[in-house]
Image (cartoon, rainbow, N blue to C red; front, side, top):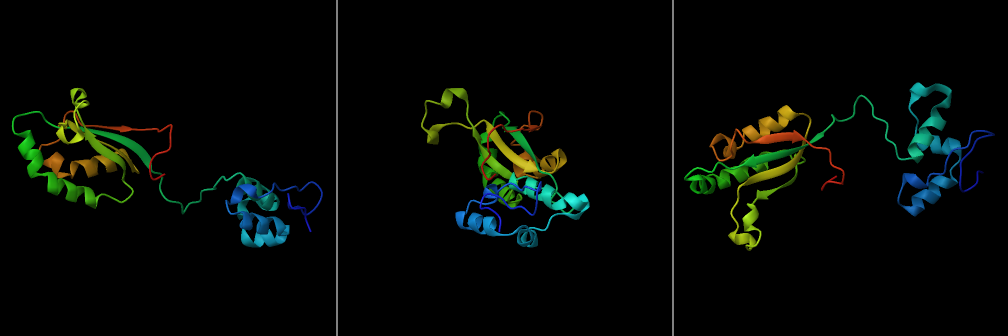
Length: 184
């Protein structure tokens, strides 16, 4: 039987302990007690690495690195979308008229599309209570497979089609977050 800190099947084949594989201490203890062959029965390594498959797989697994395969989901990219409102006469009435249909459009967005979204207010409204602030636009952080997918979703919203969002000033940019995003 191997030591509790490692699983080995002979000299020079040290396999790092499995503490990083799970947060559940009971599962960690169970995995530590397995022999190498019992462990491989649970976590079968990928075949293309030949004779060293199990060592390579266990090394990768112990550091929490996930190997992608051809059946993995498409890559999602993060975007920040800036949708300012037009400032012409009657914009408040149009915004109010199309608010309920706008919310219906947003409900049709993919569940994992919008990570964060909210209204933008002018700088001079910061001293006002939230209920008294005016809105100058909408900003969202979203995830999609491509820039074209984001454009398609935004351009199908009634706030875009009915002239609430300023089409010339609307901006969609790829976004690389340096901090964790909600829902991630």
